[in-house]
Image (cartoon, rainbow, N blue to C red):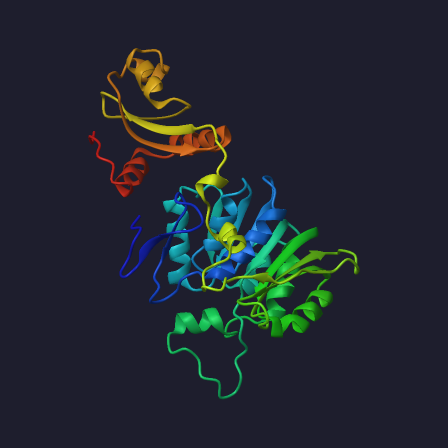
Length: 343
């Protein structure tokens, strides 16, 4: 798979380990995507299923997946941008957890199934298309910013259809659309529970809100949060915003290391395995104590590995690799610029 095309580049999102493909000349995620994701991920559990509508290049799904083991379906209508999302997922080795669908979000309930998901997040086009309104001449940007292919009522309707009872809906939008959001939610069995405004500077009107609603929730209990300040007096992001958008070394807790690894054996074949100690495991393989398969194919050499924070992730990756053909494995390794001997 070609990771970078044309004028694209790889940027980092939240963590130095989390990468996203984007082209700022055409489409790039922005702060609103990260703020939406930061609030939504607090309600997502490891066994949940999540839909990311109007997913763009997949930044929201990538961000949220960093904090849990949930499964994500990212829906993006524009083929080129959906392709960016798919390549970003592959770049982070998250194919087993994030599936990208190039599809119209209005058809998401038909495509993915109704009443199946625990959370839906959406960063939709913000602006209506009024008569005489000048749209961005860049078609991709115009679709991302204006309600050309989908409108707010349609987004909220399909989100409700996707959600299980008591499922959570999160949307980021402009404050001037709040009355419409609340009305559409009420019409689609979604009870608004939280409204979080953001302000660039104290004393200025809010320019952005994140809204949380619950399907078939009670009508009471709405919380209007204090506005979160985005910039300090020098125009820099405040510490609270920085904590949402960027991991720091002090935020990280020591974690165990679990590895999926690939060996090339003496006969040219590949072996995929799991370990918590790469050097020791390779040594055991070469002593004939690692696995029955490698015992008669020594010596072996380590050609590729990935690190995970949970044993389950590493074991899933091992299983995934082993259940592909030799041709697929060669393509995978070539995509990661791994040199190996052909049979």
